[in-house]
Image (cartoon, rainbow, N blue to C red; front, side, top):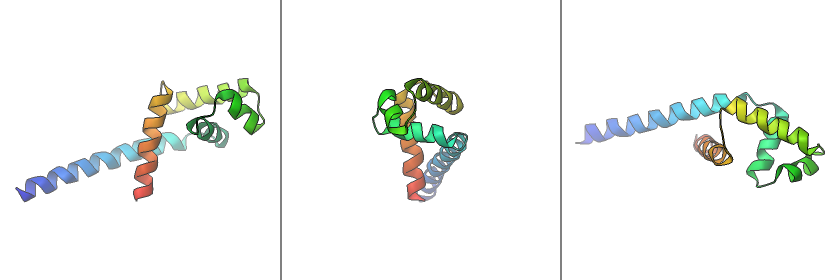
Length: 94
């Protein structure tokens, strides 16, 4: 049934939109430095490597990373990657 299929697709799109909005709100809470640290981590850098590239101490990077995880309410790097990938891919498709 075409109407049922269209409604199902609408629900899927609406769920994706709500997920995107939730993630957009979460990522907007990060400071500029936390976003820099996040980008470094997402690029595969260790905290030590990120510290060198950002001219920070490794401890400072760890503090920013911890604050970032708290603000984003995430517990692991795989969760960060998953949420950021969804957010980035959805925002690129708008």
